[in-house]
Amino acid sequence: MAEQFDVVLSEKTYTPDHSCKQNSWIGDYTKAYDAFLKDPDAFWDRAAKELYWFTPYKKVKEWNYPYARWFIGGKTNITYNCLDRHVMSSRKNKVALIWRGEDDTERIYTYRQLFREVLKVANGLKKLGVKKGDRVCIYMPIVPEQIISMLACARIGAVHSVVFGGFGAAALNSRITGAGAKVVITADATFRRGKTIPLKHIIEEAIINAPTVEYVVVLRRELHQPVEIHSEMEIDFYDMIKDVRPECEPEIMDAEDPLFILYTSGSTGAPKGIVHTCGGYMVGAHYTSKNVLDIKDNDVYWCTADPGWITGHSYVVYGPLSLGATLVVTESTPDFPDPGVYWRMIEEFGVTIFYTAPTAIRMFMKLGEEWPDKSNLSSLRILASVGEPLNPEAFEWFYRVAGKGKCPLIDTWWQTETGMHMVTTTVGEPMMPGFAGKPIPGVVADVVDKDGKPVPPGTGGFLAIKEPWPSMMRSVYNDEERYLKYWHTIPGYYAVGDLAVKNKNGYIMVLGRSDDLIVVAGHNIGTAEVESALVSHQAVAESAVIGKPDPVKGNIIKAFVILRQGHTASDRLKNELLYHVRITLGPIAMPSEIDFVTSLPRTRSGKIMRRVLKAKEMGMDPGDISTLDE
Ligand code: 6R9
Image 1: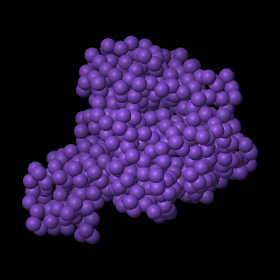
Image 2: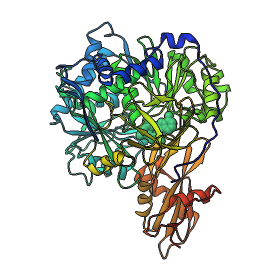
Image 3: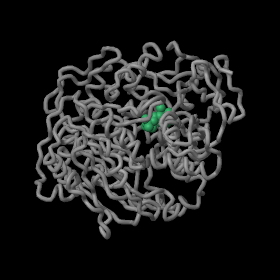
Image 4: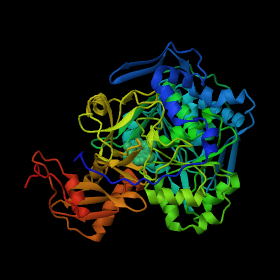
């Protein structure tokens, strides 16, 4: 990867109205950042003190490069901060969660109701023998029970590992066995674009070779034709909580006890189980929900992410609930039954903060302004984006059409591994389309070369983080080596794997991955996972997968395939391979293009040079190919 390249940067700036900054939690960015720099530990101490601890911590952090511990000796439970605190206050009957199904069904939970449900499910899991430290896999569509299950695990100290409902059986199996889950919570079906998509058979297949699984809890939504429950191992979700009481003391968790594992695609090998803790993660999610998203008590907050991704963990579930916010959550897609559905929801619910992804914004753009223009969007006060670079065109459109030029638009850069926002333009600061912004107060980040030397403005380099932060991952589950790799790639830094460039004001523009991850519609897909799915088909000898820029999805997946002897290229076979990837990894990992080839570019040591394929595909110079084997 060439790490020195110059980028021509636009200086276009939007300056929000004065009142935005005045009324925001964060206030003046520079002041807040200086306060952090002056005394980082005191800064995080103040943030942590906004949350409740059963036993106060003795020390803010211990940093033994590259291992950090935060809030040493502190005891807490994140559900106490997300639920009990509110139920004991005037927020008791405040709406916590408004859920909207695709067919317009609504379910609304006040904090008190959500609390009761969580405690019941917590007791249900206890009945199944789940204890502190046990892993529970949650593989569900976006329904209230998905969020309730996460909180129920946290209540009893079980470590949840949520797997996005769009993954197929093989992807699910590797995540279940990777985490050694004792219980899997799932549902019979998800409803999407007017169709019922069955899920239970995927679980059945996924647990065949998963010896740690003792129970499968099945939420049955298809009441007309309920799926059969195989009572040897399965139990109906609501049967599990039929006779339990809504009382369950929170498990006393050490700040450094694990809260969850979340699998994210790696550039090589199997997906990585990123481990987050009870204390530091809680503080990071809470601090940023407040100071970056600026959530206030009277906001109606809607983050469109699936709770099965990190954005859902931090900014659907834990952060906003820790603030006692009212959340909007929906299972529906933005273009069904028509492209006006999300805009109507904003008007109907009076959404004030709308947090979504560039891929959705670009889709909205393509569908046309007439759809948002049909709804009254005047309740909106803040827009936000996450998942991949928000290109200037998409910024302009979202800012103008949804925000009417009045709402700060915050492009938040962060990762599963960071647990919380890291780089953004905080509310009220001047916004520069294309630039995420600056490191938030609490974070030290820069654009550096491979030796860790900051590069001058306008020159591309690696985005890297210097100091520890509370919600940093503590480990990669059962894979020490891969944890160390993050810290040993660029001396002195946590290497995030993204290329970036800074302008003279210190604003950072994230350009994309520097490794073999492909960000498709905001979701990380590892080339390795797709390649191994393709190779597991009997007709495929070898494959290489690249990301190819796409105006809507950011990237699409393109696969190059070498066939085994005796197999001939055909459209039929192409479809079979696509189907095979769909079944093993799920629809999100399906290539949009497959080319049959007879050879692949390789280094002399045999590594496939994906960047050569990519350059060729895009009509670009492949750069240094001295290691290419002829
Ligand atoms: C939160 C999340 C992380 C990767 C990250 C980067 C890309 C996320 C971005 C962004 C540019 C932004 N990414 N937000 N790139 N601008 N605002 O997405 O976590 O799924 O782990 O992905 O996504 O490449 O390294 P995760």
